[in-house]
Length: 374
Ligand SMILES: [Fe+2]
Image (cartoon, rainbow, N blue to C red; front, top):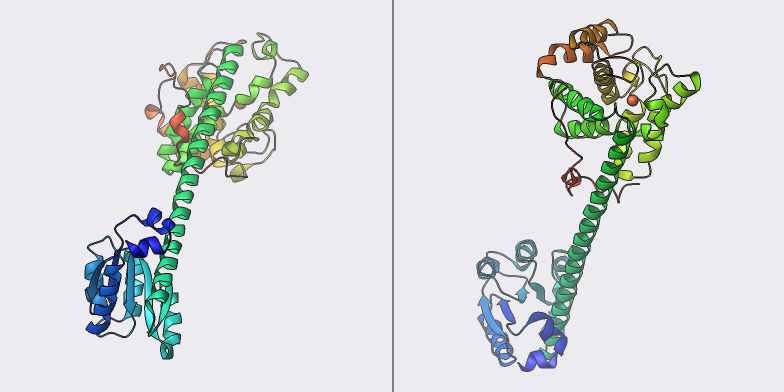
């Protein structure tokens, strides 16, 4: 292993002891001379007469260095380099060229050669050229490993952060349910109804995922409303009503620092808008209201009517459905009302046990990175 020792311990460390060289030249004499010398230096040397033969040998794998002439019959060195750099990127590629072909050497560099060597060359120059190519290849590998490592670390950190988000959100939802008896189960039912409507409407799986998330968080802002108001049996005062009406904005304020939730914010913020523009907080109307908000509005009202509240008993489902129909075009989007009413049989009954929490898998790495968003 004289050659390896001669070019320094770093190459031996980076490339191991099995340095394999493929010499490609149509002149047997040149191949023979290089082979003889490089074998003395400790290389395992193979030969090929042209690009086609060389590709077949490279396909068997394990070559550290490809040393190729440019002008050859059948497949020349440029075509070989193009293929080799695409199919065998781990092999360092060097071209041998005559001075008169310098332009061609430049073309070779553009097509994947690491370096070129001018014929006729001394073996000292060849050794240095090979050493530099091996070194460059090793640096490339290290950089790639580093990048993969970095990507994995970012991915792991992102998943960890996402899981923490989910735990925090589950804790907030539980806290809200603990302080507001009525909310217990409401968000989950609105989520189920909304997703059922979304499916009927043929929304994409990604859209359904967003709708499910927005619906499950739509009333999160009630955590900022006093318990005494949420559970008050009698009529609310104007001031108390004002406090309740702020819950959509409160939810967006709670969620907005977390990039992952930002795309859900418009639909959460506007879930109490009315189709005729008389809702809150934005008083926007018609299709200006986000689609998910229009869906949630119908489901929210239906569930509210069919639930016992602190100040009144639940309405029968038929009466609630009639009320939804009566408010179609004023409070609700008629298109969504019609989907809701025609598909009501497919919508889960309200007393279904539903204790599902936000699952940590909801935020798997398939999602766009929340930490990367701004
Ligand atoms: Fe609400």
